Amino acid sequence: MKTSFKIFIVATVLNISTAQAFDKPTFDASDANRNLAETGIVIPTNPDFYRPRTIRGICNIGGDGQMFGVPCRNLTIILNDAAGKEITRAQTADSGEFAFYVQKEKNYSISTDSSKYQFINAFKRPLIMGDVVDLKIKRVSK
Image (cartoon, rainbow, N blue to C red; front, side, top):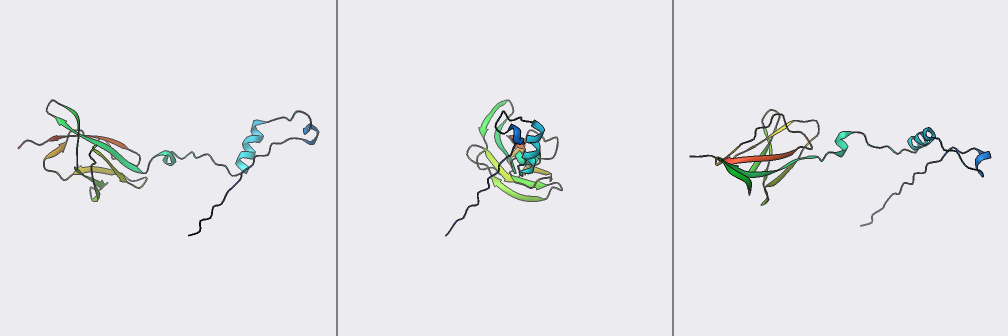
């Protein structure tokens, strides 16, 4: 398999007059900004650019006066869309961590199918791309 790479070299040219070329060149910040824009360099200003394309988190077991910190191992976490329809499922790792790849500008919620546990912390708003969730669950008494 042959792999090819394209290398783009971007150069910024400062506005230096001919008379000043051998003397001390002057530098105008507005010229530098204009030249930077003309070269095609764009500094990302979209906040979604910096957000991970996931909703991820960690799940810990506790409740009834117990201290949190015991990871939820192999617990099924369900990702639901804004209407509550199931999209996908994930198992928590031994550390209690989980993650879902999601689309931007969409709202989500999470739930579990376990009848042994219930969430202690309720979410005040829908989850969106980039959210980090700290799930707290407790055992349901029978």
